[in-house]
Length: 410
Image (cartoon, rainbow, N blue to C red; front, side, top):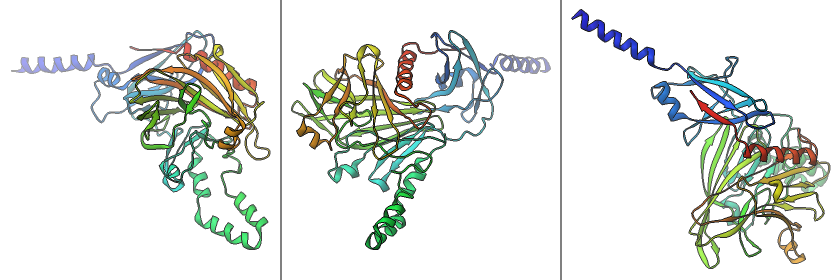
């Protein structure tokens, strides 16, 4: 009996000895440029299986110095964390059971029903919004993405911006002052509205009935089929390192078919100037051109539109005085069939709130497929201060997509 008990204990010890205590993640950089704080992804299911984790067990991610690295487990069961590697070099990270340190949310967002169903999100560098069903019900054609500039902080700012902008008591005071002192009313409004920079950024971008800061749209010949505001949403990830939201739209009419439904999956990672967006169209019957575009607010503004470069960009003048410049960009990982500037006619300008046109990155969309692209911006008052620096960022981003980090687990 004692011999049997000894053998059982020995067998259990062998199992324990064979159980891996950690996983080594090797990150190789095949490019000739340094990669810093780029988001790596590994399968959480594979991590759990290799470490034989219980359902409630947690892990930590450690860099080469043994310091914890923030991570997030996404809705699609990926463990993501920021990595860095010098040009042509390899670095390693370790995943092991443990208690992770608390991490403040960097990439996050929510719907704002108090502001006509805005879907707004941000990371440490930028902030955005897509207009919702309440706005569409009013008949306003807010087709494109809007944006909020951001600087002097890496913390979330949208909650504070919206709270001040939408405070009913503040607006009540403004409306009362208008009756007796319009100048004082204007000064009071400027003290809280997000259309004024209070030291952390602002809304100084005009969208209207255009593609705004990077919406994609099908094309019938040379005519854009503008999407309306989103109908339904599902937030899939809400930080700390990635925000993801699925937006579904009302049916649109495409070549006589009135039941084409667009779905967008938008994700924004900490540390990135660009959103990743995957667009699909249910019910589409034939292959059609598709364009991801940026609205032009100056017909002779600085535009980069060369499909061979792999990206388009535009320098927006911003609305209001002394608000700097906004640098916008779009890139298509699968490449573009064309990139061009399309100006509106005088009649179209009146219909588009006096916007001047679009710069477009074009491709083809096949029924049942997905159209993936990246879009975003930088602000001249933040870290990227010139069009040349922005174009270099876009060129480097294209290069990173073409030479992805190689990640393996052992």
